[in-house]
Image 1 (cartoon, rainbow, N blue to C red):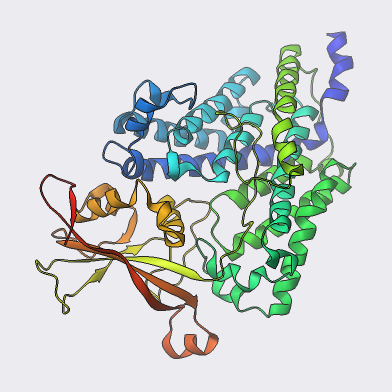
Image 2 (image 1 turned 90 degrees about the vertical axis):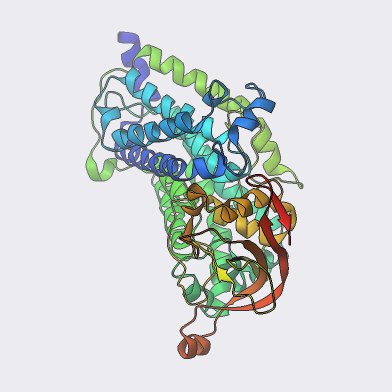
Length: 484
């Protein structure tokens, strides 16, 4: 006991108790959103009749290559149960359950959240291929070793959280500076608010800010991502100020677009550097349990060793974005928008109930929940909720290569009026009977000018580009497609 009393002061950081509390509860809230997203979407995208069934994936990929609970059993009942179990467990942690149980039980709760979500990510294929999936898993893994109300926050885990936040911000800054020249010329935001994957309700207004302010935004972004992150490793109060600046810049991004939980999780991680002892005082704790200190030290050693690969990636001229170097998604690389799209293109899906296709055929449009479609519909705010199909549709409009494996099954499900698939959409123009034919058209979209907005009430203006998919119909066996 005397040894632990000597050990505790340099191992623990009681002044970060409030920062830890906010971090843990907010991280659990992100977990809740992620599991709820799985509960609502996994069946349609990756279920037994999903667009890219997870059951087929686990049959051809080994557990070692892609660890997941679903290697033991993968069907709609099991994946649904796991998703809702994650929702309940995450809600319990948000409500404070992890602080109301012994330390070991708290660690088990966080470990279960991590294992459950890892199971979804590792069978999620293209629909779970986003950088924020790995970011949630890495942050969730570190949270296992952050302790609870029984013990002071461990210094080592707080530093690991800061190291994660540093890689998120500095990696994103480097990929921009090394990538598209518009970042160096400070002109990327002339386009980005309009062409980003899923604009939000304020994106139209951000796009129409003066170009001089757009240049200021880019310059501020470079400061926030290339300079400020180093402040996270400085003494207080510099680290807290750096964290505050990161939080402010991330809130600006939250207002300007929909990036799932990427921005929110970055904000959450910043609280690992916030010392509130000057405002709230420093709570007192008993000695840190020896077994907990040993576990934290082992975890820290593991992260330090695994950090070699992402650190080397940061220093490389061929830096990669959003890559995991191991199947557990620990210590990954991050980054976004190394290149910025200048022109926005959207795929518009249409159907008809007519038996024969003629020049006079009436086509009715499917409306997605988040991605642009109806030019008079204001973009909605969905983040931190992740609309996985909408995001893939954005990629598909960039290149047909991004449709491989999932787009044809998606069209087949529309022709079949598949209920699970239709729940992913905002509107179904064929509520009674399925369409006889479905087609896809490619349009160029741009935000309307202020004058156009006043005259037409539209948020978007679109111009036909070409046919993306000719009219197709079901024939033969269920789900078999043939052009017509």
